[in-house]
Length: 71
Image 1 (cartoon, rainbow, N blue to C red):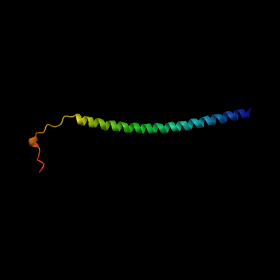
Image 2: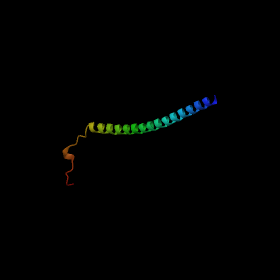
Image 3: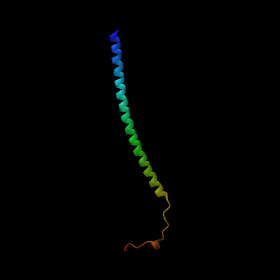
Image 4: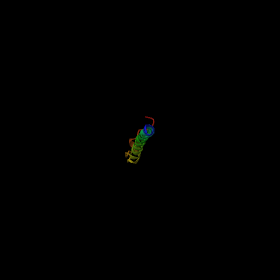
């Protein structure tokens, strides 16, 4: 009877070891995805700023106020 208990214990320990390994891999993937998401958010914010800057109305400047290139 003790061999059955030992076999079950070994089987459970192996299962836990596999689950721990899988959990570590999932954690690594999650961290990588989080970093990628952060980078994507930064990129989107920069694009939004460029769009806002491009759609703003430019200053109305008179050509008479411009300095000639030789100054």
